[in-house]
Length: 313
Image 1 (spheres, rainbow, N blue to C red):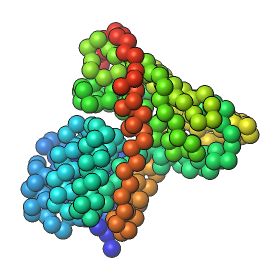
Image 2 (image 1 turned 90 degrees about the horizontal axis):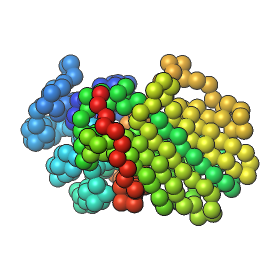
Image 3 (image 1 turned 60 degrees about the vertical axis):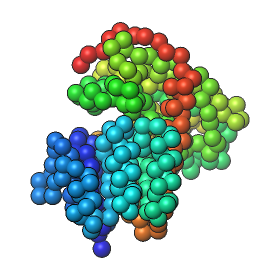
């Protein structure tokens, strides 16, 4: 039997990924939306979350697609109303509020899920399995895309709390923290801030590995032409390369996968997230892994800030 879910925040990611994933799932029924500006045809729409929580006790799950800064208040309201909560990435604006939300969920006896969609890319688990018994020598991340293509007109990403280039960069970090068998921590960072923006447009990161492997990441939102989402791991057994954000995998130059039929590197990620959420609700589980967000927070704490030319769309 399907469960009823409400989708809060009807923007690009909700329309492109959440709505079709819910529609295709036997586990879920999109029963309502909450948004001041958007709605979905044929679905009951609310402008206020409190009104939904009061009038629709039959809706068990609230999936939040809002920007990170306002998300805490919505999540806290849903948890206090004993609803299960699913959080789009990043799960909040700060680590402290994410820890507070997890505590609320435990007190209420409901599930909460900090989702990392890039971990559900087609070849991430295969990469994790291959790396688990290898000795790592080096790992590099090259994550470069055009912000104008992926976030047109979204001013919130340039405001404090919006993460800037770490909005996509955290996707790479979610993969790295998934596939590496050992934990890493940040040791240095350089963050490039446009003179007219509050968040960075590019970042270079260096990490410490417990066995001395060299680990680095470069994120850039000024990429023209081909978009680049690549992770390369050099080991004692050869080199593993994830491309297209984890959708494709090659080991020692041999492709282990075929290109998705529609060329979409996000194919299947959100359906798998909703399947996991269904499992958590059935089992009464909680998944609030914050390791990708911890690395971003460390970058803002430790990073050397460099001013670069203004950015305008």
